[in-house]
Image (cartoon, rainbow, N blue to C red; front, side, top):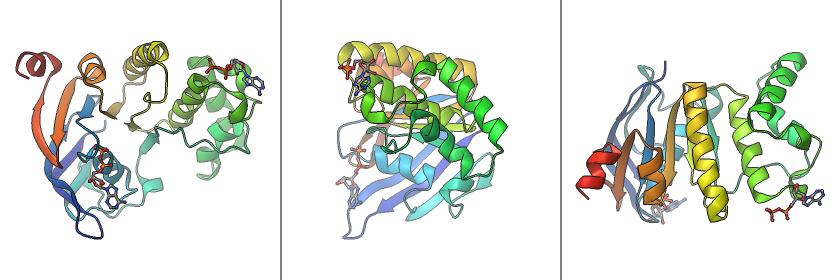
Length: 226
Ligand code: ADP
Ligand code: ADP
């Protein structure tokens, strides 16, 4: 179970930019929610607050009924996939995927089991000994997703994960991430500026503009009432 609730969430950066202005979103267990809107509208800031990577200026963030405003990122049951993949260049694919479990003191056998299982799901078993620079863009993206999967979090966050891929790969990875959503039965929050991505992947779409929510609804609803 993982519900995520954002209540009256605001973010004012140092210097006074109001990046997120009184955002309210109710995310159900296992829902796939897409935050969409033009560059600078506050999508990424919203996601980073859910991850705990950015302080919340005001409002209440609740995960599974528990207020987590002051819970540090590593103690939230959340894993995030970044746009630039954020892989450690000096580590192998295996060690990149294992790292988040190592720092959480999982034992070696459990780490090995989870890394190999995730590698199998993502079809990157043959790449485990490579370093990131010896991977294609699409392969790096898979490793970044794998690093999130091994944590077995209740909530996955994706920050424009496909925007560095070419069009064909992007369409393929959309389908794969949707497939993972069904397979892992997790709650997912996905940020993109791509409306087609939002319409094809989301259970629920949140449209943002200048830090404010403009619309919330299912893909069909928003497609018919743009
Ligand atoms: P999006 O993800 O929709 O592109 P962001 O959340 O990155 O939007 O940015 C929202 C607003 O906050 C923008 O005006 C951006 O310039 C500003 N902003 C983002 N990060 C910072 C920061 N670290 N310091 C100050 N302003 C920021
Ligand atoms: P693309 O352009 O399709 O993203 P690349 O041309 O970078 O992919 O890579 C094509 C294939 O070659 C991939 O399977 C990738 O893993 C492999 N590869 C790329 N660079 C190296 C390298 N330095 N060492 C080993 N394999 C590599």
